[in-house]
Image (cartoon, rainbow, N blue to C red; front, side):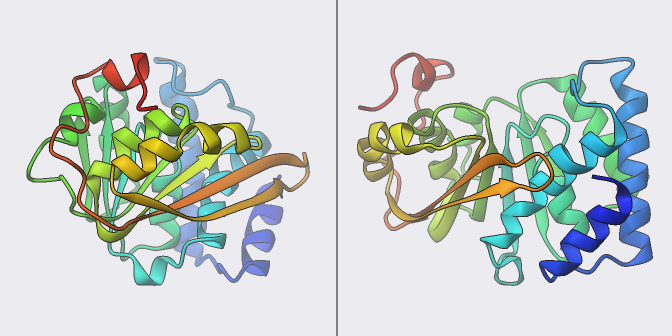
Length: 238
């Protein structure tokens, strides 16, 4: 996906980029490639691939979430900023918090936010399990996103404690997630969530499958969740 296709395909979906936003994506790409030479941020560095598999792929969230109705977003395990930074570029009003367990990635993201002149973006070097127990963040986000971080039963424990009542957890999965959905029913319900929608699409050009799972927070998460770091992964709620 070249830059022109990226701009055109987003416009077809009702997302029209200003010259400044186009420039921000250009800067994002050059900064990502430059830093990737010093640290392993992504295996994907070819420009057309980054525009398709990182930028466009992140923004597909906006095809299923009405970001005009969202204010506070938390991205769990964002890595090099996906999906939240491309979404923030497209929807500048958003207040974005990113939590990641690797400090070097946080350093990259802080530099990136400065380079792109992004406002209302905050970065936290923390494990999702301890972050979710922090009273300053627990149950305080309209939308929590995660992109291909872990299985849904584990992700739910990392993300749902951060979602405010009435807010949503939006999980972005690469392939069909039917088996994961089945395995995560108990976890979702235990953590105060309720399945709202499962959508799927094919990523253009390469036609790879994407699945999006929207979970609504209908009641408070019990205090004991999330459990200690590493526990959700070792023994998912089942």
